[in-house]
Image (cartoon, rainbow, N blue to C red; front, side):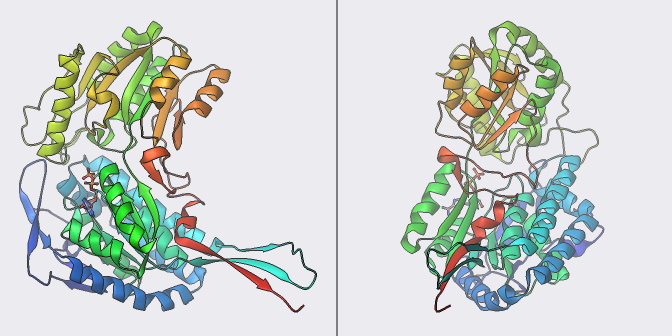
Length: 484
Ligand code: ADP
């Protein structure tokens, strides 16, 4: 079983209004280790009734939380951040056990997750208003920002800690309580964060974590009029459903949905740097991030050279249980995820793709898949339009800038895009021409707490992290003061 320095971080109960509790029904969900298939434990299978109680509790906790000064909220968040860092090894162990990512990557995520709490602790003190020049001599115009109210969040399994802190950080900093429903596969990371939040002094009801039935919990979160804001990270399909459900109560929405990131290598690129960037962008978390390169476009003149270098680099990746030293590729999250990668590979090979590396389920079994590179990929293949969310690097070939920009933008998604080039005019043109919320230029790694994360088109709404991230949890109030 899981060896932790502080075993109390592993909770098999949900955290509702400051109380660790089971589901009303007593039902539970199993949590397994994707690297071994081993049962790690269970969590409560909660539903609409528990969610309604958590929402009512949050509403009750709201006035006192919003009444605190930004500085007071900042002090509590800062404590939470410090506790996350102090417990980073245990948090990483929990994450690797339930999610599969290599321990070093899990520890990296804990630092990344904590950075959002630190950042928004600082931002809590900087929610400034405005005074506007009045068109009337006897009136003054004042703008203030207020917390939007009770917030709800539904988060995915690929970043079990960071996708939570990126939402809870700004919500709590702004003065809003938040209820989180983590993904079924990775509830223990979320519950461990709740343990630390409680220790940091986050009051009961201000932050609750409910595990269980996604539809039932999501249904209550979206239909309950007390919830003023929903933040979701996950698939575009579920995002659409939640948006439709939220229409009945006109909730403010933040949606971080699917991506289909192009990664373009121009013939003036530094090829070694491009290979390094492709490796990070494509194979981080075994290809299971929404900003992972999904389509790699390489210009004619450097196509074969890039392919050869990439194959050599990918061949050096080490697949295995994330707890083992040196492992860089853990298992995929589940059998369904493996099937999707396998399908994309089969489809590409059936339509003329050239297999350069991998292509099959890994000999380790479970949900391990071989890091794969396929050349001669074209627009008619599934990988061109669907997010693979796995360790498959498909290499498309292109002739010129106009052609590749058209292809890169030929998708309903617009989250991240990457390109490697040196010519400054081209760098500027392509950066402006890409239809995406984020562009990595000569780098494959762009995420941090200071930069705004988010997409355009059907990749979502709103921005997380950065100085813009608070706005999603604030409403503007305009006051007109007359009689002067
Ligand atoms: P992924 O493909 O990453 O699993 P999903 O969009 O299916 O993405 O899941 C992301 C989160 O959304 C998870 O917490 C999951 O439980 C939740 N979820 C899935 N379906 C629904 C739904 N119908 N209502 C509310 N939440 C849902």
